[in-house]
Length: 292
Image (cartoon, rainbow, N blue to C red; front, side, top):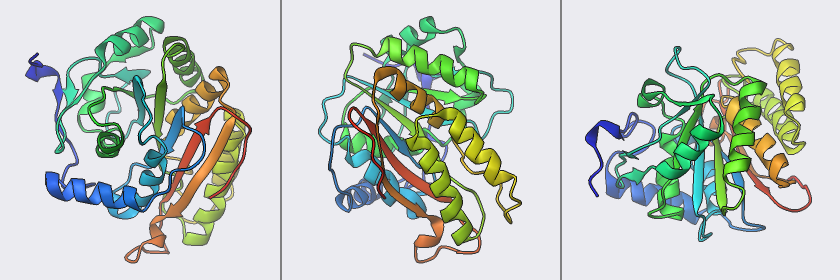
């Protein structure tokens, strides 16, 4: 079947956030995955960072490694809105494919339309996706651990608690009888010094483990009110993360594991005076624990 070119979403950050050459990209992703460890229960949801691979690829790999070899029949990736100030609500791309250097990643249009029918906040907004990188950078990892699988991309354009609750309910209802994986794309703190980032990011991750979105909002508000130098945000992907927390609660996935934490100051060319934080988190069915 030929996909209409009008609903093919072209790469926005190939050659910038990740290698644009297919062989180089495949080698890089496989290298990161080769350094990751798969352990514990199969995830129903993950949090993975969306920065340039040289900074966060090793953290993203630890998240996606947990999905390697699992036979999912539904995959949803939740992104955040960096690029479109006019985007509203919950922006889905319901048809066609995302073109990538490793090949097109087809949209699960049946699932996408079911989600749109489940809640009127979920609408097709082309402009929200065209320049946005938060979903795109997850796809090479998805292609290597879940080759050939379809997916549904949704950007949480307005990360209000109400929108997150609406999307979590729609996901829970639509995915109820599916073996599903939901991926929340999110970085952590932006631009504080190294030690401040570690403290702020661990506070955010502890709130994520609680599965209480109000605790996460409170933690973010508390940290932002401290006047920490150059701290611009505590979580660049709060909407996807809160949605995933609510979805996990809705389906009874109460085990939350922080698989890995790092920040951009941990790589050899990173600047410890100005860092961005990254976390890999797994949600699964079982009892709660925290590591990292």
